[in-house]
Amino acid sequence: MLDIDDCLQQLMALQGVHGASLIDFPSGSVIGAAGRGPGSIGDAPADAADMIHATMQTAAFATVGQPAHVEDIVITAGNGYHVMRLLRSDIEARMVLYLWLDRSVGNLVVAQRQLSAVAAQISAN
Image (cartoon, rainbow, N blue to C red):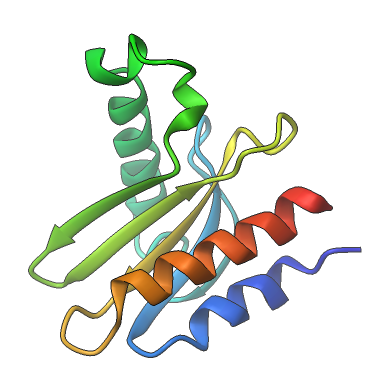
């Protein structure tokens, strides 16, 4: 059986990660969280869910293939990178991995690769 906490700890092991969480984006519910970010700060899970809904409903994504084609949503902010990785399988289509990465210490490409690997682990189970 897959341990969500173990998956989140894999993400937390990356240099510069402030927090990671698994969110059910239609409801904004947090399935699991580690560190800081969605799941530990007020309305942050709902904010992440709203960002995903807004992205998926834009004209650019509504007219090109399947909306599930979106893999990552990256927000560059003064306090770091906020990366949301949508899980691909039909069963997990409601789930998104969220990662908050420090811009001055973390590596966005490495973080995205690790998010992809963890998402594959979750989707495979």
